[in-house]
Length: 252
Image 1: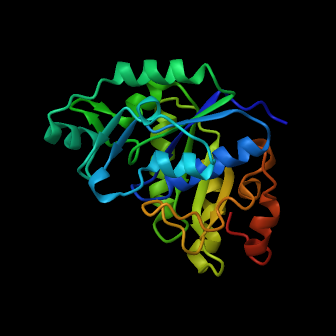
Image 2 (image 1 turned 180 degrees about the vertical axis):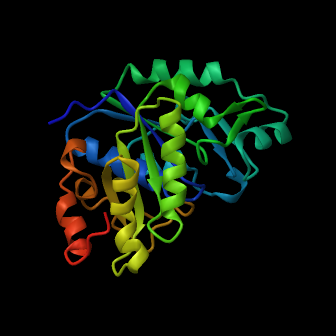
């Protein structure tokens, strides 16, 4: 078993791509493996549209109490970038506070999962992007991508940007993979892995009824280990997943 780092930063190729679902699933998987897991969402925007904040969804899925001020430092009403949303509220995001708070919080856990807001080039401040926060926090980054058409370009752009900043990326996760995928969904995961050089480390299927905003988990928690490869304490057989769609085709 490979050594799991102290934690991970979860980013996505876009907003609404499934970061919170992946965060909850990964936290559940690590918890099942006996790890003491803490989860942080430093900045939450769009709170006026959500009855259930992302961080509440995650901790409720773990069936654990939490103090929101300890795990979510900025909660901003408008569904905008952290910078734009904070300016509208007259709030200045203190990145030193975020980094120090995560460092202090992590002392009590085996693994800490930090969920970002939006993608890596979303502005957190006037001259400070999410990738700057990623670099300053210093955790390995897991990239969440959609399965469908357009996922290759969005995933490769995100992974290449992280590579250029020398950020450690253990791999990417496909979120919302359908039961009956089309040809793009069938081939995209392998193409992304082959072209980028980064590993597919997880596949979260489309789960009927699941809604972060409404706090509905569906079957997300039934067996979260099945979503991740063994190096992440999971049971996903990546070769079996790829062979299901590639047995008669060799794209790369």
